[in-house]
Image (cartoon, rainbow, N blue to C red; front, side):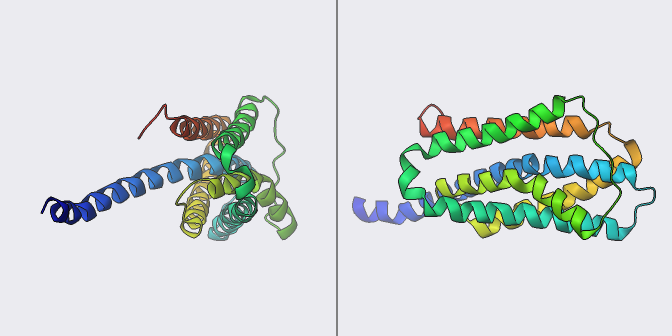
Length: 212
């Protein structure tokens, strides 16, 4: 009877644990998406600053380019990481920590930099392709990290990241047009800190120091 009773209770416990894991995963994924999108936000601010009159097409163009590439790059990184996963599984948590910390460190450096960025008002194919690639390279490394983590739904993850970047890029365009460069560096600093903290959390959980 006890065995039957345990078998009866187990599905409910499994459902609770899975539900908790999904909620934590969505929250962490949201933070990663926001952190990654801060480079796109910063460039969008510059675009907004250099564009005299914003039109709906400007929001669609910048959102589609930045959001699309921010979804594409983690997919490529995931495929690369999955290919070599068996060779690096023993060190996956250290690699994830190193990659996220490196990305976050670069964003912090850019956020504290006093160098002025050139404002380019072009929304043409060539300009946007270069900017979208430059702002999404970091997402390639995050895709490799996803391949090393358990139970990551890569399709849902990249669609979520792309959508968040689409929205935040549009916000950056408007912020730059209205406020100028006031929030650009602060956004990059916040994004860098978020990615470093997530990397640290992954490392500490694998080492057994954190358990939540």
